[in-house]
Length: 353
Figure 1 (tube, one colour):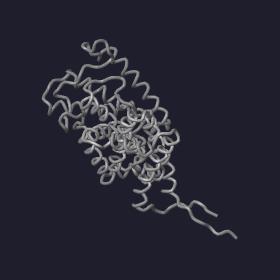
Figure 2 (cartoon, one colour):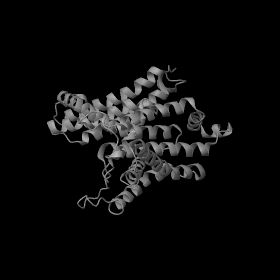
Figure 3 (cartoon, one colour):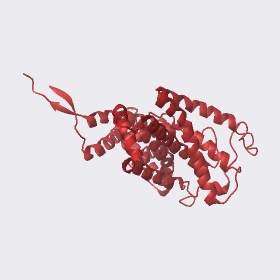
Figure 4 (cartoon, one colour):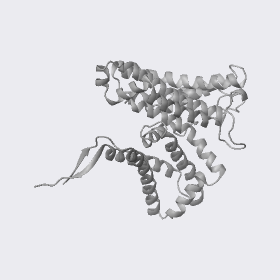
């Protein structure tokens, strides 16, 4: 007879191996599905890898796509660590982008050393303030934050569309629903000449380091982990659970808002309603693949970004649908959930009489 037994403490090797195995399993399962449709799996994986990292252009495109995923992954990771289920990173990203455009499209004039921090700060504040409502409702009234954050995504997107058709609409946009462009002084510089990779990647990497430091070396980080581990025990020990949830919610929303600011200031230059292809939702998968560890979010985001970028090349060459990338992402989430079961429990054979 075989049964599950709780693990006292998973080893570091196991905690590293489970996410890697989950990502590889998802990729292999996706290739099996491709093979069943008659697509040569070996050629498909070659095109996928070449499209994601086979040239300088491919690599920079993957890192460009990974930049917002690092930030939305951090937003999910820091919230989930405290058992605050923020599903609203998509809306917070758009809120940050809207604030960045409102500040950086000419409302304030100044040199780059002033404009760049202002645009990033505006985006972070907008995302953080948007998350304050669900966090307060969770902390004070025990309102389910999954529902409130998810529904706010649609509210924010509709509000963005209204603003793009109204006060923020670009008069030189030939009728298209888009904002006025970010001024040059507020634009993030490119990291590689003639490529789309911008300084938002550096901001995302620094954010990952800061979040890791916050969680491991500060009082607030300890409080976050304690509340996530057992809120009742944390309250009994004197930790302000409600205040910790509110602070966590604000930080989570701020990271997602910063992702939106980076997309308009570093990549697109203006805001449209299709700015994000689902970075907020993909950030949840990134956080789960990273086992909610801030530094592990970086390789997890690069993996997911590489799948999306590589799938474009594979689609053009083999005629495979672009939805292959969504299939891999969905399977990654399922595999990591199954993997987490073996992270918490182990199989043991029990002799029966």
